[in-house]
Length: 205
Image 1 (cartoon, rainbow, N blue to C red):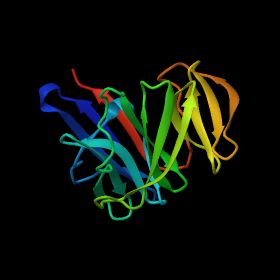
Image 2 (cartoon, one colour):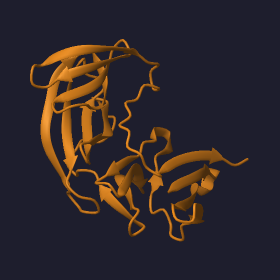
Image 3 (cartoon, helix red, strand yellow):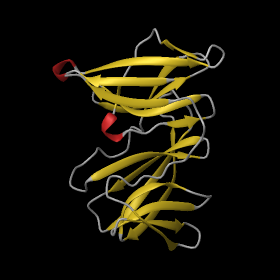
Image 4 (cartoon, helix red, strand yellow):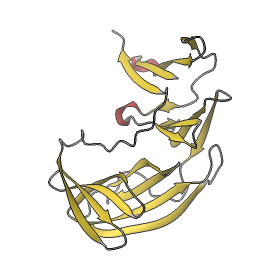
């Protein structure tokens, strides 16, 4: 499956969805609609329990997880937890969604704090109201800018204040510098799983 989209100025975003057939080695157009706006400025996609793929999206003014089941070719919308803080504000609240085992984790944290706490929420099921469980709170951690994901059990990957990749062990409470340097806003941790899902964006003149 691939979703192609282009900006249409005041008319919003237009999507063109195609599904690949392994048997015929061909693409066909999906006949339904994309029921929310994928947040293309912060693109990510991930596998959820093998046959479903997810994106961060907005449904009107509400942030959601937009998912597509490749077996029944159905889109579902899953709201974020109702009791998390709004983005921004005096604390500069931010959040990211990352793969965690075969599920999805939502990480909520204050960007403007020198010492940061990271609230971890885990998705229990798609298409269901209040489908998140707050599992842990990591911190306070100093000298870190943003979370990037999870590695092995109990290991948390972050970008530090120098733009380096670090690993935080939640059991020993110790950092390990991974010796990787990346350009800010370009450094991402990718959890690879082979799939036929892609997300591309383009523009119309």
